[in-house]
Image (tube, rainbow, N blue to C red; front, side):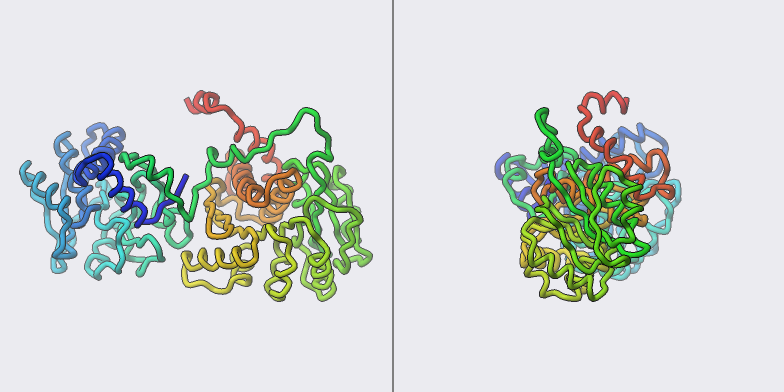
Length: 511
């Protein structure tokens, strides 16, 4: 699913109005109707006070039109117009007149007005600002937003939480509505998925307001939301007449004294996700533990007992995953550099492999094209430099990925895979996956997918989705706190089965 910018959404509105020969008011009425239907289907006329806070732009117009529908169906409403400017959109004014025609008189809140009384039992509809907010709310509007947040009422935001700009972090964290639920029009917004802006809503849902499907389909976007419909076409099913060699030979390189477990997790995940053969290359100290823990893999060792000093792979691997638990000793750095100069196959680079690249940026010229880099936040900062906010981070990541022709993974609640100028935003995963070794498992999974013939980009996008889905299935049985990295591996097979489950079975299960 595409993620559109504010400018693209405005263009979609304009295109729809012109193509369908309708007025902008008709589109606003459609939005208000969908908002009402969502609310009414859940409240069913319940006796509750709905407090609507409406700005004086089109977002406020949506709220004003919604108020009319609510009143016509017997709901107790209080309408507040947040009078933050002398300018008003024409559709806001049109719907305000319709409201007054029904003898509904909104309370106008100005800079010198007192704060309205709110109850925790109220439902608050936030329609103050929309996606076009391009300057900080005035301080008195910020105080009103803080008042809404302090009310402990259920807050339903229209399109986006008020106070959030669409292309930067908020100017003041206290001046953003914290929404219990966001009803967003037609397409998801990037701010729902970033750490600095995603914290302002607990849940979100899309409402179809009839924006033109031709425009939405043909318009290229800088970000795509990755769910089951997007990853299913990437899946490469097993062939009947195949053997282990059909699915590649992956090599996992890493480990040092006390950190062999990282290689064990990566190797096990690589094998479990479907790599035909897996060989681990570790210091001598890791030989017996790996051969005992995972009898299905092969093990090569360095001559040195505790660290990697020379990486000698006596065959041409399909892919190399490297870095987990490896350390950054001088001899290890030299061994890593030598491998980069001699390898032609794509790589998946994690952990200390990334730390070495950050300390020796000249090594990047030797990293095979289309390699996948999987940094956690601090490793990412070492690679691309500090950033001002999440949007600046994404731009720096795109610049880095384009310059070095690599796939760069930004890990997080919604991990984002960057390639050139496109970002793929993941939808699976949960807080239980914030646990030691989870990243090692992901590296192993992406490595195993590349071994089977997935392109590096598809392996990264598919691997992140499957990794998160396995984590989701793990917490469904054990809860967030008890999920371990090994538990993610144990659920990879179940994640595949869930991914391939026919829709009708899913529907029956939900019923």
